[in-house]
Image (cartoon, rainbow, N blue to C red; front, side, top):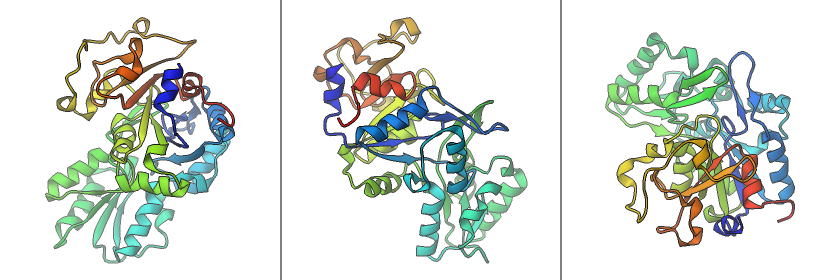
Amino acid sequence: MAEWAKQLAGTRAVVLDISGVLYDGGGAGGGVPIPGSIDAVEKIKASGLKLRFCTNETQATRDKFVKKLQRLGFNISVNEVTAPAPAACRILKERNLRPHLLIHDELVPEFDQVDKANPNCVVIGDAADNFSYKNLNEAFRVLIGLENPILISLGRGRYYKETDGLKLDVGVYMKALEYACDIQAEVVGKPAKMFFQSALAEMEVEPQQAIMIGDDIVNDVGGAQQCGMKALQVRTGKYRVGEPQALGPDAAPSLPGSGPRDSSPSSTPSIGESALSLQPPCCPLWDCSTQNLLGCTPPPRVLVCKGNVTSVFLLLGWGPHQ
C-alpha cells in the first residue's frame, strides 16, 4: 500500500463532498451519517491536512445545513463550507443582476440582500417540490422575455441520493430551460472550475496539492480534475457500478491488457473490509489493483475506493501529523 501513498505525495489539503460521502441525507429524518464518516473528519483534522467541505447543497441556507450536520455529530463550522448560494449572491451583486428565483423555500433567505425587483435573470437550484410545471413555466417566461437571457444554475447534478432513494437534481431542470430558451446556463457549484478554485484559495494551496473525495464521477471527480486536482470516488451515496462511464466512453484510452472487469465483490482485492482500484479517467474496464501501480500507462488519475471515506485513510496510510 506504500505505492498508493506515493501517488498522492505532496498532498496538503482535502476537499470533501458531503451528501453521499459523509451522510445519506434528506427526507423527513434529515439524513444519517455514513458509517465511519464522523471519525474520518476527525482524522483529517488531526492529520495536519487542510480541509474544506465543498457541497452543491441548495435545499437550505449554509447556516441551517451546517447545524444539521452538527446534530448528526460532525465537527464542522460554517466557514469551512464552500456552497453555491453565497457564491451566486456575489456574482449577482457584482453584475447588477436581479434574479427570478426557482429554488427551495429553505434557501430563499440566502438571497435576502439581493435586489429581485423586475428580474433580468433566473437563478435555479434544487427546488424539490417547487419544480412544478407552473414554476418552471414562469421561469421560462422570464428568460424568453429577456433580450439577453441569463440562467444561473446552482449546480448541474443529474441526481442525488436521499435516505428513501435517488432523486432528480437541478441539472435535469436546468437542461429543460436551456433547451426551451436556446441558451447555456452559467453553473455556480460543482463541477465549475471557479467553484473548486474558490475552495483552494480559501485553503491557500495549489490544485496539485489537493485531493477531492466525492461520490459523483462527473461533478466531484471530473470537476476536480479539470481544475488540476487529484480525485477519489468513494462507493457510497450515488455511486453505481460502471458509473465512471459517465465521463464519456469515447474519452477512454486504449490500454494494453485491459479487459472486462467483474464487478462482483469477490473479484475486488480487499484489505480488511476495503479495497481500492485505480483507473485512468473515463475507463471503467481497467483495474490496476493487481499491477505495478507506478507502471500504469497512462498514469492513473482516478481512485475508486470500495467502502466509505474511512477507507481512504486505511489504504493511503494517512495519520496524525503525517
